[in-house]
Image (cartoon, rainbow over all chains, first blue to last red):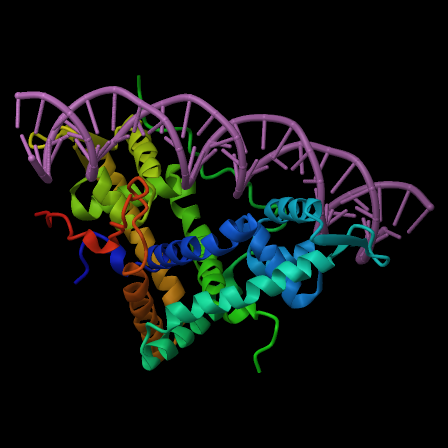
Amino acid sequence: MTDNRLALETFLPYRLNRLAEAVSRDFSRIYKERFGLTRPEWRLLATLGQYGMMAATGIGAHSAMHKTKVSRAVTALEKRRWLMREADTQDRRVERLSLTRAGEDAYRQLVPLAREFEQSLLARLASPDKQAARTGLDALESIIGSTAKSYQSTPPIGDSGDAAGYDGPAAPA
Amino acid sequence: MTDNRLALETFLPYRLNRLAEAVSRDFSRIYKERFGLTRPEWRLLATLGQYGMMAATGIGAHSAMHKTKVSRAVTALEKRRWLMREADTQDRRVERLSLTRAGEDAYRQLVPLAREFEQSLLARLASPDKQAARTGLDALESIIGSTAKSYQSTPPIGDSGDAAGYDGPAAPA
DNA sequence: CGTTATTTGTTGCGGATGTAACAATCGCTT
DNA sequence: AAGCGATTGTTACATCCGCAACAAATAACG
């Protein structure tokens, strides 16, 4: 049973990556070709479209994007005039982000395309499989969310970050 | 019912991405900190460790990596002397890749760590949830495998996109 | 054979990404 | 209120990535 080799086909990180990459790449054509959006930009648009108004940190936490990714996506959508920044009067470090009229228009155009894409995938699944997928994803999310560090913030100081002493490849000249 | 907003929390590409990114990022610390491997390099190592000998094209197809990613990972592992190239006598375009002794040693060290990581995740799942996750992932893989274009080759003139063309390498000793 | 199309793998290039460093602000403690 | 750590968001830098172009080899086809 316990072979000394690892069967990648049943290894969870590997499976999730393959799936996410394939699905994302397919789906990206929709917003890439039609609107010239990058993936982080689409995520930002979708998050603001759903929630109306949010700060950059919240978006990063919600969509698991690195804060620099969020920052650059915000800049990009702002240049496109799809997004507005508003100073938060309570906390001047925070910028309250929201979509402009043009941004909402784009969002409204994209939502049905996203739904259609998802439908075209799920339509290929038998009903019990669909249910299993939902249940399985729910379960995985519940255990990931509790473990995952938001990785938004600077690494804690206590842990002397230095990756356990890796000097470089063993390549003696 | 059909809201005009898209609920990202139930949107399949979004869910898969969140999960894959969180899990991958956690797992990457294992091979990054201990061995200084990048993600493509880890995948290459794991694939060769499992299958023993394979050509670059096969690895790309199996792990859904772009061929340039594979090429660069091969160069990196070769510099580290963890990987050997052997000319294929049948087809001189092909290089038969395999791990050196040092590469196999690293692989043997990593496999238990990978298993341990996966266990620590799955241990948090109730048995039915574990089963649902497996079934759901199986189902999803079956439907995207048939749709995904391998994107290894140059954009097909016609539409030769055939991702299912991977029949598996020779099972090693 | 000779010509043309396809496959295998590498590389140049522009663009995307993460790390680390940073300024500005907040809040907690003294 | 002064100091100090933590938080928010941006930026410089180095690296990573994918597309397109490419050389070398093979396959397909007359």
